[in-house]
Image (tube, rainbow, N blue to C red):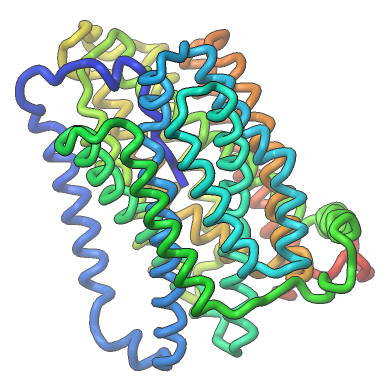
Length: 474
Protein backbone atom coordinates (compact mmCIF):
# COMPACT_ATOMS: atom_id res chain seq x y z
CA UNK A 1 0.00 0.00 0.00
CA UNK A 2 1.33 3.38 -0.93
CA UNK A 3 0.31 6.42 1.12
CA UNK A 4 1.25 9.86 -0.18
CA UNK A 5 2.38 12.41 2.39
CA UNK A 6 2.18 16.01 1.24
CA UNK A 7 5.00 18.45 1.89
CA UNK A 8 4.39 21.85 3.51
CA UNK A 9 4.78 23.65 0.20
CA UNK A 10 2.18 21.34 -1.27
CA UNK A 11 -0.36 22.39 1.32
CA UNK A 12 -0.05 26.14 1.06
CA UNK A 13 0.88 26.90 -2.53
CA UNK A 14 -2.06 28.31 -4.53
CA UNK A 15 -2.94 26.86 -7.89
CA UNK A 16 -2.00 29.06 -10.84
CA UNK A 17 -4.19 28.84 -13.89
CA UNK A 18 -5.72 25.72 -15.34
CA UNK A 19 -4.22 22.30 -14.99
CA UNK A 20 -2.08 21.23 -17.94
CA UNK A 21 -3.64 18.84 -20.42
CA UNK A 22 -0.62 16.60 -19.84
CA UNK A 23 -2.06 15.41 -16.54
CA UNK A 24 -5.54 14.81 -17.95
CA UNK A 25 -4.13 12.79 -20.84
CA UNK A 26 -2.16 10.55 -18.48
CA UNK A 27 -5.10 10.07 -16.15
CA UNK A 28 -7.53 9.45 -19.02
CA UNK A 29 -5.32 6.90 -20.78
CA UNK A 30 -4.77 4.91 -17.59
CA UNK A 31 -8.45 5.13 -16.60
CA UNK A 32 -9.53 3.83 -20.03
CA UNK A 33 -6.96 1.03 -19.83
CA UNK A 34 -8.17 0.07 -16.36
CA UNK A 35 -11.82 0.14 -17.45
CA UNK A 36 -11.11 -2.03 -20.47
CA UNK A 37 -9.27 -4.61 -18.36
CA UNK A 38 -12.13 -4.79 -15.89
CA UNK A 39 -14.84 -4.92 -18.56
CA UNK A 40 -13.12 -7.86 -20.21
CA UNK A 41 -13.30 -9.76 -16.92
CA UNK A 42 -17.01 -9.09 -16.51
CA UNK A 43 -19.53 -11.70 -17.50
CA UNK A 44 -20.84 -14.99 -16.20
CA UNK A 45 -17.68 -17.04 -16.30
CA UNK A 46 -16.66 -16.33 -12.70
CA UNK A 47 -20.17 -16.80 -11.34
CA UNK A 48 -20.48 -20.15 -13.09
CA UNK A 49 -17.11 -21.46 -11.92
CA UNK A 50 -17.45 -20.27 -8.31
CA UNK A 51 -20.28 -21.24 -5.93
CA UNK A 52 -22.54 -18.57 -4.53
CA UNK A 53 -21.50 -19.22 -0.94
CA UNK A 54 -17.89 -18.41 -1.83
CA UNK A 55 -18.89 -15.23 -3.68
CA UNK A 56 -20.89 -14.15 -0.62
CA UNK A 57 -17.91 -14.84 1.64
CA UNK A 58 -15.50 -13.02 -0.68
CA UNK A 59 -17.72 -9.98 -1.14
CA UNK A 60 -18.25 -9.72 2.60
CA UNK A 61 -14.51 -9.69 3.17
CA UNK A 62 -13.94 -7.13 0.40
CA UNK A 63 -16.59 -4.87 1.94
CA UNK A 64 -14.88 -4.97 5.34
CA UNK A 65 -11.41 -4.57 3.82
CA UNK A 66 -12.58 -1.54 1.84
CA UNK A 67 -13.97 0.06 5.01
CA UNK A 68 -10.68 -0.55 6.81
CA UNK A 69 -8.64 0.89 3.96
CA UNK A 70 -10.96 3.91 3.75
CA UNK A 71 -10.27 4.53 7.44
CA UNK A 72 -6.56 4.48 6.64
CA UNK A 73 -6.55 6.42 3.35
CA UNK A 74 -8.72 9.27 4.66
CA UNK A 75 -5.99 10.19 7.15
CA UNK A 76 -2.99 10.09 4.82
CA UNK A 77 -3.25 13.40 2.91
CA UNK A 78 -3.82 15.52 6.03
CA UNK A 79 -1.53 14.08 8.69
CA UNK A 80 1.25 16.55 7.87
CA UNK A 81 -1.28 19.35 7.33
CA UNK A 82 -2.83 18.85 10.76
CA UNK A 83 0.51 18.91 12.56
CA UNK A 84 1.49 22.03 10.63
CA UNK A 85 -1.90 23.57 11.47
CA UNK A 86 -1.06 23.09 15.15
CA UNK A 87 2.18 25.04 14.61
CA UNK A 88 4.79 22.30 14.85
CA UNK A 89 8.10 22.50 13.00
CA UNK A 90 9.31 20.05 10.37
CA UNK A 91 11.65 18.50 12.95
CA UNK A 92 8.82 17.99 15.45
CA UNK A 93 6.63 16.46 12.75
CA UNK A 94 9.44 14.15 11.68
CA UNK A 95 9.70 12.84 15.24
CA UNK A 96 5.98 12.11 15.26
CA UNK A 97 6.30 10.08 12.07
CA UNK A 98 9.31 8.23 13.48
CA UNK A 99 7.25 7.40 16.59
CA UNK A 100 4.59 5.79 14.40
CA UNK A 101 7.03 3.61 12.48
CA UNK A 102 8.95 2.83 15.67
CA UNK A 103 5.78 1.74 17.42
CA UNK A 104 4.93 -0.54 14.51
CA UNK A 105 8.44 -2.02 14.58
CA UNK A 106 8.60 -2.62 18.35
CA UNK A 107 5.05 -3.71 19.12
CA UNK A 108 4.03 -5.14 15.74
CA UNK A 109 5.56 -8.56 16.35
CA UNK A 110 3.97 -8.79 19.80
CA UNK A 111 0.47 -7.98 18.55
CA UNK A 112 1.03 -10.34 15.61
CA UNK A 113 1.80 -13.20 18.00
CA UNK A 114 -1.23 -12.26 20.11
CA UNK A 115 -3.38 -12.37 16.96
CA UNK A 116 -2.26 -15.95 16.30
CA UNK A 117 -2.95 -16.95 19.92
CA UNK A 118 -6.14 -15.04 20.74
CA UNK A 119 -7.68 -14.85 17.29
CA UNK A 120 -7.48 -12.83 14.07
CA UNK A 121 -11.04 -11.54 14.46
CA UNK A 122 -10.09 -10.07 17.84
CA UNK A 123 -7.01 -8.57 16.20
CA UNK A 124 -9.16 -6.98 13.50
CA UNK A 125 -11.45 -5.50 16.16
CA UNK A 126 -8.37 -4.23 18.00
CA UNK A 127 -7.25 -2.54 14.80
CA UNK A 128 -10.53 -0.64 14.65
CA UNK A 129 -10.31 0.44 18.29
CA UNK A 130 -6.66 1.54 18.22
CA UNK A 131 -7.07 3.48 14.98
CA UNK A 132 -10.22 5.19 16.28
CA UNK A 133 -8.28 6.20 19.40
CA UNK A 134 -5.51 7.52 17.14
CA UNK A 135 -8.08 9.59 15.24
CA UNK A 136 -9.57 10.98 18.47
CA UNK A 137 -6.17 12.26 19.66
CA UNK A 138 -6.00 14.51 16.58
CA UNK A 139 -8.49 16.85 18.30
CA UNK A 140 -5.78 17.97 20.74
CA UNK A 141 -2.86 20.19 19.79
CA UNK A 142 -0.77 18.91 22.71
CA UNK A 143 2.42 17.32 21.34
CA UNK A 144 2.42 14.34 23.70
CA UNK A 145 -1.24 13.57 23.05
CA UNK A 146 -0.39 13.51 19.35
CA UNK A 147 2.59 11.27 20.16
CA UNK A 148 0.23 8.82 21.89
CA UNK A 149 -1.92 8.93 18.75
CA UNK A 150 1.08 7.98 16.62
CA UNK A 151 1.77 5.12 19.05
CA UNK A 152 -1.75 3.77 18.55
CA UNK A 153 -1.48 4.37 14.80
CA UNK A 154 1.71 2.33 14.59
CA UNK A 155 0.06 -0.65 16.30
CA UNK A 156 -2.98 -0.30 14.03
CA UNK A 157 -0.82 -0.28 10.92
CA UNK A 158 0.84 -3.55 11.95
CA UNK A 159 -2.58 -5.14 12.44
CA UNK A 160 -3.91 -3.81 9.13
CA UNK A 161 -1.18 -5.50 7.12
CA UNK A 162 -1.27 -8.83 8.96
CA UNK A 163 -4.50 -9.63 10.83
CA UNK A 164 -6.92 -9.25 7.92
CA UNK A 165 -4.86 -11.27 5.46
CA UNK A 166 -4.23 -13.98 8.09
CA UNK A 167 -7.94 -14.19 8.87
CA UNK A 168 -8.82 -14.44 5.17
CA UNK A 169 -6.32 -17.19 4.37
CA UNK A 170 -7.27 -19.32 7.38
CA UNK A 171 -11.01 -18.85 6.86
CA UNK A 172 -10.74 -19.53 3.13
CA UNK A 173 -9.16 -22.94 3.62
CA UNK A 174 -11.21 -23.76 6.72
CA UNK A 175 -14.34 -23.46 4.59
CA UNK A 176 -12.85 -25.79 1.98
CA UNK A 177 -12.58 -23.32 -0.91
CA UNK A 178 -10.17 -23.84 -3.79
CA UNK A 179 -6.72 -22.30 -3.45
CA UNK A 180 -6.99 -20.70 -6.91
CA UNK A 181 -9.97 -18.62 -5.77
CA UNK A 182 -7.83 -16.97 -3.08
CA UNK A 183 -5.69 -15.33 -5.78
CA UNK A 184 -8.70 -13.52 -7.21
CA UNK A 185 -9.71 -12.29 -3.76
CA UNK A 186 -6.22 -10.87 -3.25
CA UNK A 187 -6.29 -9.09 -6.62
CA UNK A 188 -9.75 -7.62 -6.01
CA UNK A 189 -8.76 -6.49 -2.51
CA UNK A 190 -5.79 -4.54 -3.91
CA UNK A 191 -7.88 -3.17 -6.80
CA UNK A 192 -10.50 -1.86 -4.37
CA UNK A 193 -8.55 -1.07 -1.21
CA UNK A 194 -5.33 0.30 -2.71
CA UNK A 195 -6.91 1.74 -5.84
CA UNK A 196 -10.54 2.79 -5.98
CA UNK A 197 -10.99 3.39 -2.26
CA UNK A 198 -7.80 5.46 -2.06
CA UNK A 199 -8.99 7.78 -4.84
CA UNK A 200 -12.48 8.22 -3.37
CA UNK A 201 -11.03 8.74 0.12
CA UNK A 202 -8.67 11.42 -1.16
CA UNK A 203 -11.53 13.24 -2.85
CA UNK A 204 -13.72 12.94 0.25
CA UNK A 205 -10.97 14.25 2.53
CA UNK A 206 -10.37 17.19 0.19
CA UNK A 207 -14.13 17.92 0.08
CA UNK A 208 -14.43 17.93 3.88
CA UNK A 209 -11.46 20.23 4.38
CA UNK A 210 -11.70 22.55 1.35
CA UNK A 211 -15.31 22.66 0.21
CA UNK A 212 -17.01 22.26 3.59
CA UNK A 213 -14.27 24.18 5.46
CA UNK A 214 -14.37 21.75 8.39
CA UNK A 215 -10.63 21.98 9.04
CA UNK A 216 -7.80 19.41 8.80
CA UNK A 217 -9.21 17.26 11.61
CA UNK A 218 -12.39 16.43 9.65
CA UNK A 219 -10.87 13.55 7.60
CA UNK A 220 -9.84 11.84 10.85
CA UNK A 221 -13.41 12.04 12.16
CA UNK A 222 -14.66 10.56 8.88
CA UNK A 223 -12.06 7.80 9.16
CA UNK A 224 -13.28 6.99 12.68
CA UNK A 225 -16.83 6.62 11.33
CA UNK A 226 -15.74 4.11 8.67
CA UNK A 227 -13.69 2.21 11.24
CA UNK A 228 -16.66 2.09 13.63
CA UNK A 229 -18.91 0.69 10.88
CA UNK A 230 -16.27 -1.91 10.10
CA UNK A 231 -16.04 -2.85 13.78
CA UNK A 232 -19.77 -3.57 13.89
CA UNK A 233 -19.69 -5.63 10.67
CA UNK A 234 -16.70 -7.69 11.85
CA UNK A 235 -18.18 -8.25 15.31
CA UNK A 236 -21.48 -9.64 13.99
CA UNK A 237 -20.44 -11.41 10.77
CA UNK A 238 -16.91 -12.79 11.18
CA UNK A 239 -16.07 -16.09 12.83
CA UNK A 240 -12.90 -16.47 14.87
CA UNK A 241 -9.82 -18.33 13.71
CA UNK A 242 -6.44 -18.75 15.35
CA UNK A 243 -3.05 -20.11 14.44
CA UNK A 244 -2.93 -23.92 14.48
CA UNK A 245 -1.93 -24.88 18.00
CA UNK A 246 -1.22 -21.27 18.97
CA UNK A 247 -3.98 -21.24 21.59
CA UNK A 248 -2.04 -23.70 23.73
CA UNK A 249 1.25 -21.78 23.78
CA UNK A 250 2.40 -18.45 25.16
CA UNK A 251 2.92 -15.31 23.12
CA UNK A 252 6.67 -15.59 23.69
CA UNK A 253 6.67 -19.20 22.48
CA UNK A 254 4.78 -18.11 19.37
CA UNK A 255 7.42 -15.47 18.63
CA UNK A 256 10.18 -18.04 19.04
CA UNK A 257 8.33 -20.43 16.74
CA UNK A 258 7.94 -17.72 14.11
CA UNK A 259 11.66 -16.91 14.30
CA UNK A 260 12.52 -20.59 13.91
CA UNK A 261 10.22 -20.83 10.91
CA UNK A 262 12.08 -17.99 9.20
CA UNK A 263 15.49 -19.39 10.16
CA UNK A 264 14.85 -23.01 9.15
CA UNK A 265 12.92 -22.50 5.91
CA UNK A 266 14.80 -20.48 3.29
CA UNK A 267 11.60 -19.96 1.33
CA UNK A 268 10.11 -18.02 4.23
CA UNK A 269 13.38 -16.12 4.72
CA UNK A 270 13.62 -15.14 1.05
CA UNK A 271 9.98 -14.09 1.07
CA UNK A 272 10.48 -11.83 4.07
CA UNK A 273 13.66 -10.31 2.65
CA UNK A 274 12.00 -9.55 -0.69
CA UNK A 275 9.01 -7.96 1.01
CA UNK A 276 11.22 -5.76 3.20
CA UNK A 277 13.38 -4.65 0.25
CA UNK A 278 10.41 -3.80 -1.97
CA UNK A 279 8.40 -2.03 0.72
CA UNK A 280 11.49 -0.10 1.87
CA UNK A 281 11.83 1.20 -1.69
CA UNK A 282 8.11 1.90 -1.86
CA UNK A 283 7.97 3.91 1.37
CA UNK A 284 11.11 5.81 0.37
CA UNK A 285 9.35 6.67 -2.88
CA UNK A 286 6.47 8.14 -0.86
CA UNK A 287 8.80 10.83 0.50
CA UNK A 288 10.78 11.29 -2.71
CA UNK A 289 8.33 11.75 -5.56
CA UNK A 290 7.24 15.30 -4.67
CA UNK A 291 10.77 16.85 -4.61
CA UNK A 292 11.74 14.74 -7.63
CA UNK A 293 8.91 16.11 -9.79
CA UNK A 294 9.22 19.66 -8.50
CA UNK A 295 12.84 20.25 -7.41
CA UNK A 296 12.63 24.00 -8.05
CA UNK A 297 9.25 24.60 -6.45
CA UNK A 298 7.21 23.92 -9.60
CA UNK A 299 3.44 24.23 -9.18
CA UNK A 300 2.29 20.61 -9.21
CA UNK A 301 -1.33 19.37 -9.01
CA UNK A 302 -0.54 16.84 -6.28
CA UNK A 303 -4.10 15.60 -6.00
CA UNK A 304 -4.26 14.80 -9.70
CA UNK A 305 -0.84 13.15 -9.65
CA UNK A 306 -1.87 11.05 -6.65
CA UNK A 307 -5.09 9.96 -8.39
CA UNK A 308 -3.16 9.06 -11.55
CA UNK A 309 -0.71 6.96 -9.55
CA UNK A 310 -3.55 5.11 -7.88
CA UNK A 311 -5.17 4.36 -11.24
CA UNK A 312 -1.82 2.97 -12.40
CA UNK A 313 -1.85 0.75 -9.29
CA UNK A 314 -5.36 -0.41 -10.21
CA UNK A 315 -4.14 -1.30 -13.71
CA UNK A 316 -1.38 -3.37 -12.11
CA UNK A 317 -3.80 -5.25 -9.86
CA UNK A 318 -6.05 -5.99 -12.85
CA UNK A 319 -3.06 -7.37 -14.74
CA UNK A 320 -2.06 -9.42 -11.68
CA UNK A 321 -5.51 -11.00 -11.57
CA UNK A 322 -5.09 -12.14 -15.16
CA UNK A 323 -1.56 -13.44 -14.64
CA UNK A 324 -2.34 -15.40 -11.49
CA UNK A 325 -5.31 -17.11 -13.15
CA UNK A 326 -3.03 -18.67 -15.77
CA UNK A 327 -1.61 -22.05 -14.70
CA UNK A 328 1.45 -21.58 -16.93
CA UNK A 329 2.47 -18.35 -15.16
CA UNK A 330 4.27 -19.13 -11.90
CA UNK A 331 4.34 -16.28 -9.41
CA UNK A 332 7.93 -17.12 -8.43
CA UNK A 333 9.01 -16.53 -12.03
CA UNK A 334 7.11 -13.45 -13.18
CA UNK A 335 7.85 -11.59 -9.94
CA UNK A 336 11.50 -11.51 -10.97
CA UNK A 337 10.47 -9.37 -13.92
CA UNK A 338 8.26 -7.21 -11.69
CA UNK A 339 11.23 -6.42 -9.42
CA UNK A 340 13.52 -5.66 -12.37
CA UNK A 341 10.97 -3.39 -14.06
CA UNK A 342 10.46 -1.62 -10.71
CA UNK A 343 14.22 -1.11 -10.45
CA UNK A 344 14.34 0.37 -13.95
CA UNK A 345 11.39 2.66 -13.16
CA UNK A 346 13.00 4.11 -10.03
CA UNK A 347 16.35 4.47 -11.78
CA UNK A 348 14.85 7.05 -14.18
CA UNK A 349 15.55 10.01 -11.82
CA UNK A 350 19.18 8.87 -11.56
CA UNK A 351 19.66 8.94 -15.34
CA UNK A 352 17.71 12.18 -15.71
CA UNK A 353 19.95 13.81 -13.12
CA UNK A 354 23.11 12.39 -14.70
CA UNK A 355 22.42 13.36 -18.32
CA UNK A 356 20.14 16.36 -17.96
CA UNK A 357 17.09 16.49 -20.22
CA UNK A 358 15.63 19.84 -21.22
CA UNK A 359 15.47 23.11 -19.33
CA UNK A 360 15.15 23.32 -15.57
CA UNK A 361 11.78 24.25 -14.13
CA UNK A 362 11.11 27.49 -12.27
CA UNK A 363 9.39 28.16 -8.98
CA UNK A 364 5.64 28.44 -9.45
CA UNK A 365 5.91 27.27 -13.07
CA UNK A 366 4.67 24.07 -14.72
CA UNK A 367 6.34 20.70 -14.43
CA UNK A 368 9.59 20.50 -16.42
CA UNK A 369 10.36 18.05 -19.21
CA UNK A 370 12.63 16.14 -16.81
CA UNK A 371 9.70 15.95 -14.39
CA UNK A 372 7.44 14.54 -17.10
CA UNK A 373 9.98 11.83 -17.94
CA UNK A 374 10.25 10.90 -14.27
CA UNK A 375 6.48 10.89 -13.93
CA UNK A 376 6.23 8.17 -16.58
CA UNK A 377 8.74 6.08 -14.64
CA UNK A 378 6.80 6.60 -11.41
CA UNK A 379 3.56 5.44 -13.06
CA UNK A 380 5.30 2.27 -14.22
CA UNK A 381 6.49 1.71 -10.64
CA UNK A 382 2.94 2.17 -9.34
CA UNK A 383 1.69 -0.42 -11.81
CA UNK A 384 4.33 -2.82 -10.46
CA UNK A 385 3.10 -2.05 -6.93
CA UNK A 386 -0.36 -3.16 -8.08
CA UNK A 387 1.09 -6.48 -9.25
CA UNK A 388 3.35 -6.89 -6.22
CA UNK A 389 0.69 -6.87 -3.49
CA UNK A 390 -1.62 -9.71 -4.63
CA UNK A 391 1.36 -11.75 -5.84
CA UNK A 392 3.15 -11.40 -2.50
CA UNK A 393 -0.08 -12.30 -0.71
CA UNK A 394 -0.30 -15.46 -2.79
CA UNK A 395 3.27 -16.50 -1.96
CA UNK A 396 2.71 -15.79 1.74
CA UNK A 397 -0.40 -17.98 1.69
CA UNK A 398 1.70 -20.81 0.23
CA UNK A 399 4.88 -20.64 2.29
CA UNK A 400 4.20 -18.95 5.65
CA UNK A 401 3.17 -21.49 8.34
CA UNK A 402 -0.45 -21.10 9.38
CA UNK A 403 0.21 -21.54 13.10
CA UNK A 404 2.34 -18.35 13.27
CA UNK A 405 1.21 -16.50 10.15
CA UNK A 406 0.54 -13.09 11.74
CA UNK A 407 3.73 -13.23 13.81
CA UNK A 408 5.92 -14.10 10.82
CA UNK A 409 4.35 -11.35 8.72
CA UNK A 410 5.12 -8.81 11.45
CA UNK A 411 8.69 -10.08 11.69
CA UNK A 412 8.95 -9.20 7.99
CA UNK A 413 8.06 -5.59 8.84
CA UNK A 414 10.81 -5.06 11.44
CA UNK A 415 13.62 -4.26 8.95
CA UNK A 416 11.18 -2.19 6.89
CA UNK A 417 10.17 0.02 9.81
CA UNK A 418 13.77 0.32 11.01
CA UNK A 419 14.89 1.41 7.56
CA UNK A 420 12.13 4.00 7.24
CA UNK A 421 12.97 5.44 10.66
CA UNK A 422 16.61 5.82 9.61
CA UNK A 423 15.62 7.46 6.32
CA UNK A 424 13.23 9.88 8.01
CA UNK A 425 15.91 10.86 10.50
CA UNK A 426 18.61 11.39 7.85
CA UNK A 427 16.64 12.25 4.71
CA UNK A 428 18.21 15.72 4.42
CA UNK A 429 21.72 14.24 4.30
CA UNK A 430 21.28 12.38 1.01
CA UNK A 431 20.68 13.83 -2.48
CA UNK A 432 17.60 12.56 -4.32
CA UNK A 433 19.63 10.72 -6.95
CA UNK A 434 21.46 8.76 -4.23
CA UNK A 435 18.15 7.79 -2.61
CA UNK A 436 16.68 6.56 -5.89
CA UNK A 437 19.92 4.71 -6.63
CA UNK A 438 19.61 2.96 -3.27
CA UNK A 439 16.01 1.96 -4.08
CA UNK A 440 17.18 0.58 -7.44
CA UNK A 441 19.82 -1.56 -5.72
CA UNK A 442 17.24 -2.86 -3.24
CA UNK A 443 14.88 -3.88 -6.03
CA UNK A 444 17.64 -5.62 -7.99
CA UNK A 445 18.54 -7.53 -4.84
CA UNK A 446 14.87 -8.49 -4.45
CA UNK A 447 14.89 -9.85 -8.02
CA UNK A 448 17.97 -11.92 -7.16
CA UNK A 449 16.29 -13.36 -4.07
CA UNK A 450 13.15 -14.09 -6.09
CA UNK A 451 15.30 -16.14 -8.48
CA UNK A 452 16.75 -18.00 -5.50
CA UNK A 453 13.22 -18.70 -4.26
CA UNK A 454 12.17 -20.02 -7.67
CA UNK A 455 15.15 -22.38 -7.71
CA UNK A 456 14.36 -23.58 -4.19
CA UNK A 457 10.69 -24.14 -5.02
CA UNK A 458 11.62 -26.19 -8.08
CA UNK A 459 13.72 -28.40 -5.79
CA UNK A 460 10.92 -28.55 -3.18
CA UNK A 461 7.63 -28.34 -5.10
CA UNK A 462 5.42 -28.70 -2.02
CA UNK A 463 3.12 -25.71 -1.72
CA UNK A 464 2.88 -25.14 2.03
CA UNK A 465 5.80 -24.28 4.23
CA UNK A 466 6.97 -26.88 6.63
CA UNK A 467 6.72 -26.15 10.31
CA UNK A 468 9.88 -25.01 12.02
CA UNK A 469 10.08 -28.31 13.83
CA UNK A 470 10.11 -30.37 10.65
CA UNK A 471 13.30 -31.65 9.12
CA UNK A 472 13.31 -29.10 6.34
CA UNK A 473 16.61 -28.80 4.54
CA UNK A 474 18.53 -25.64 5.40
